[in-house]
Length: 301
Image (tube, rainbow, N blue to C red; front, side):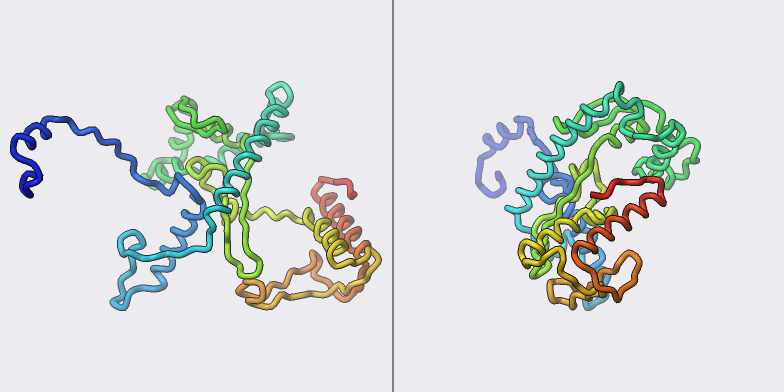
């Protein structure tokens, strides 16, 4: 400022004697809106740069090369989705804690597991942690790494009332996080396939497993009564109406899907004609037989 004539030497000397007070808060993709989507987008773009190099053969840098990246995320819908998930899951978590006290469930958050089975589950989870990965890459022996998971250390853990500074063993923190119910939400425009909202979990800083992208648990037949009810309500079908039990494919690009989508029956057998009533009842009986095979019989309603 002195060199450019904005201040004189006396002002420069006076200002130089004042200590600088800087609050440095670098931006992080772990905070803010659409954290899970941004993490997904980051990996997507890294792959894109490898597959689409410049003319000279070098790869773009997604942070420094001034790329303009446009997505279909709607910030208003994203905000609504994040609020809805956090509000609902906070209430469900409070109910879970009230129903799984030490008195009611001494093995909480686990149910119907013996101590040895719980220890095995926790140890397997430890293998997938960042702590394990870093120590393993540094050449530390397995036994030493496991021992470190049983030594108390200072850490910051997630809670629905805010982050908690505490001291516990990494293994205890794994068990603590097992208490939390997980959730995800993705909203897509069926006509175009445009993703409008993407909530991959509760808090990206503490739960980096993206339930939208990585989750593989299917809802199974839970949605089917709603599908049948919608067909009866909107298409005016009757439970006695018959339809062919055939393989049906949705054409590529017709509803935003890139490839043809051909959902199959569980037995991959076709050719019959079923009433809506029979199809739903048969579905339920099939699920019941499956559950019997795994020792988990359930009542069919």
